[in-house]
Image: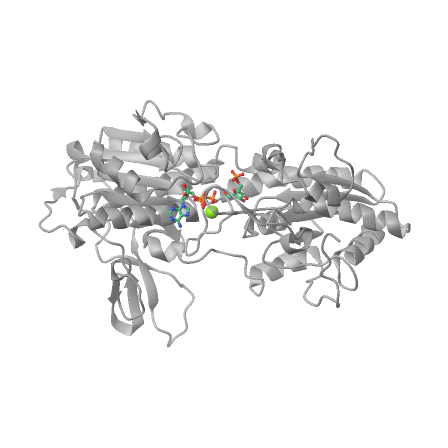
Length: 490
Ligand SMILES: Nc1ncnc2c1ncn2[C@@H]1O[C@H](COP(=O)(O)OP(=O)(O)OP(=O)(O)O)[C@@H](O)[C@H]1O
Ligand SMILES: O=P(O)(O)OC[C@H]1O[C@](O)(CO)[C@@H](O)[C@@H]1O
Ligand SMILES: [Mg+2]
């Protein structure tokens, strides 16, 4: 530990001239001495051998910030991803495994496919195992063997062929299993929680002094992982969200004073809602977790709805599932198996509140269609108060917002997922460990786990992108709530 209590194993900083800092990733040779190296088999691969400068120079790094001032320090850099001249594994000795954890995301199957095919076709590795159903699968399930034939067309299907889960991370049981099965490369695909789990596995492997490379491939439909440009599957999700927004728009424009309300995913970060809104241009108001809003009074949502309906005769509202949670209800906070907050259905709550408000006012007859949660609760009556008393698994089960993450990746996410997977394979073969493969300023890099697990990526509402969104909808900023406007479900 250093004087700040930070584990030195987590920080591998290299200082250079003019304020240059490399936040390097660990390497197996950091804790195992005299490891043998081998020439990279790609040197004799006919597809790659003709490429000029195919191998990445050891000293190539990628800056985290590309907008700089004349006199500013060069700042943080990450190691550039890609194949190295030397590898630290003999292909015949490699026994790799792949696991997927957390929620679904378009592109998961593509990443699995490309790890299997990359290891096989680029490095001649034939032993690849799939771990079923997330971290707990290491100690509670049998593995499956994965060959290029087994994965040949999985990228055309949504979901993950390996299955996934939340919870069940038991570091020592997992590492015991890695040791028992003689696995020496572990590929872990998942979101922020998964990468924290991957980091714990890496540390335990290092503590035991094992020659096992641990590589993460960050997956998050919510785009909530910091440092990287964006996560795979995000574009596909935003594209699919257009279908929900279009449906809401058609419903809203087909009646007098029609309101289409769409709930999209985004537990803590509102990127999907913001980008889907910007892409569509049919949205009049976008609500995200990072930007609190209120309903009543001057500058509130009700006032804005009335104004938009008077002007246009219809409107579309997009709400991210994590928005307005403080308003929805004071009730005991619940968590899922991984410790993530279980949310109240803000979309259903809003639709009931809006309908109730305009019915009470008797100035405007509105028709509201909610594209979010189908509500099959027996004996459900229209009182939101009654609804909010139910803690409802069924809401999640029947939620059409899941449409945006259960689909296969679009073409560009397929290419992106392919490159992330190949970078992870090159990194592990080159002996790097404790890293994720991620895109930084358009370049593939290796980033140490601690850099992406220390905080979540969120929409910054003082940044230009949110301002662009606000100017596209002309919605209120909700910055100045009048006294008493933070009304909840009372
Ligand atoms: N702090 C942690 N330490 C170790 N393991 C963790 C930690 N947080 C989460 N995990 C494990 O990681 C796995 C996935 O976590 P989680 O359910 O939060 O999904 P996620 O990876 O964040 O993906 P999503 O973006 O879908 O939420 C679970 O098996 C969970 O037990
Ligand atoms: O119902 P599940 O599978 O726990 O997933 C829900 C969560 O997964 C996410 O999509 C993140 O993957 C969140 O937006 C959402 O709240
Ligand atoms: Mg998460």
